[in-house]
Image 1 (tube, rainbow, N blue to C red):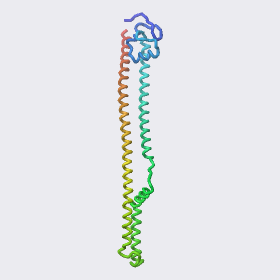
Image 2: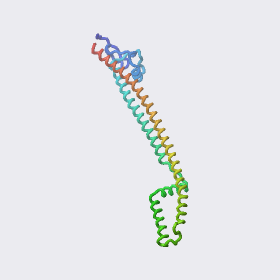
Image 3: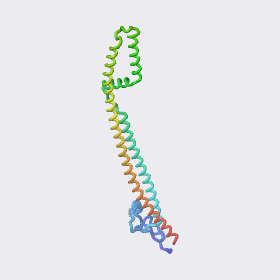
Image 4: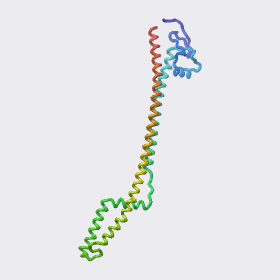
Length: 233
């Protein structure tokens, strides 16, 4: 039913038809908070027009979308920050300078050389040369005739010295493997903690979205009801 009465808005103090009159008591709390923020003198006992209410409804939805983008940006920054920290952790692990003593350096070089094809080829060539000199050139009357006792002594000494040096290098390699496993564990633990933090933030974000979407749905229903009431009148 149409009416010719008018009322004055508590916000703009402009007169509107009674059919557009909205009480502050019927306004949703989030929208009312926006109205009070813009007009501190407004209370729930006041009245505004549907047109003015729609302005604040649109502002509420706009603020929600802006804040939503802000939340996503903050989450993205947080994730990027954690990835940067992890990168710094990995870089620190990879860039650590290993301090080795002189004996450890010698042991590593001997182990590297003793386990190479270069050492095998050179050692075989040395044995062949030693035997050839004593048999063919010195006619088995040289400094080490057959059965090459001196050569056997040299080979035994080389094996006796080389074995503990290689074991020293292997022990150092085991220490390096344990240290590498410890660093891998630290990185994996940090990654797990970061994933848990991300899950917590996502859960919080989803709950926040659900609450805001419910509020937006209520506002949209109110706007649709107002439009239907206007059509009926």
